[in-house]
Length: 373
Ligand code: HEM
Image: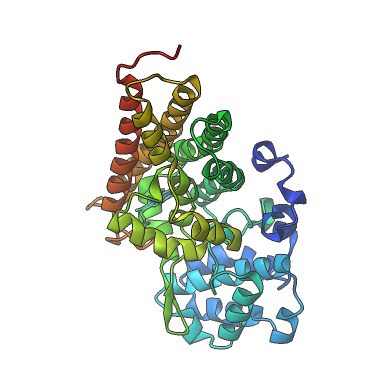
């Protein structure tokens, strides 16, 4: 049993093929196991000719690609992706070096309804465990960072469901606080993941060894970001909790780019809810209506539950900012921007926004009121 099974039993039986994690991990449609086991050595030696030959050897015929199911197509993109990021790390644009990979990337993107390169989900959740695990470096710290991201995928899938419930409820409904409490349980995995990262991945290793593998690559004239943790869709939770009606240019721009790297159902969730009313706004409106009259118990429960979700988001972001600041400090960083295309300053802004919303909700609970009769 893996950590994943403990967090989300049953996800593997979902109709959505992108959630059938065990099957995707198991799949090896390119027969890449042996070749990718040698990848850390090629990267250590910066052996560009070997990496180029390896990518060329893995590129399948388009006829085969068009017969693959989504599960096989995701696994193939995962394996090609390891070589795309490796070549770029050594200064080579992979599609320019191996042009025959382009139609394959485009067909895999079409079949999976995702971007034409690997994402963080390919690199972590859909990556096999044990001896078949795909890694750029083979270092233990790389495996730990992959594990940290693996820990959160099932919880975010579960949070998507509870946030969908939340979006359809009003604060007076007892289900509103319940949806928030369930969301809080799921989001706690983000805190556990960042604590695990802080304990097991040094900022120096991330900055100087791993970060270069997450550089963007050019696919048909467009840059696509590497499979970095910044693509972990915490925005799925932000959206309905506080973000959809609180514009912030920098975070909005980051999200506009990040959404493209997520799964089709998550992009659909974003499209449906981005113009909606957040839980914070719904609660604020309900509380202002009640100001002089009473404080119904459902509303008090909703406020407590909402503040709890925001506090957990804030805790993740504060700890995450701590490690990001170290990894991007002047003395060790190789890049100014994060691998998700944004600076560390963005993390500070998003933390501030999360904290402001939490404060707003907490203050609303502290305002003197006449208790309900
Ligand atoms: C050494 C470890 C890490 C470093 C140095 C780091 C650094 C960063 C940086 C600089 C950003 C800004 C966007 C960008 O990259 O362009 C970012 C965003 C983000 N990272 Fe990380 N990160 C690390 C690990 C993680 C892990 C383990 C997770 C989740 C399990 C994670 C989740 C996120 C999320 C969700 C964002 C989007 C901003 C937000 O929602 O607050 N990161 N990270």
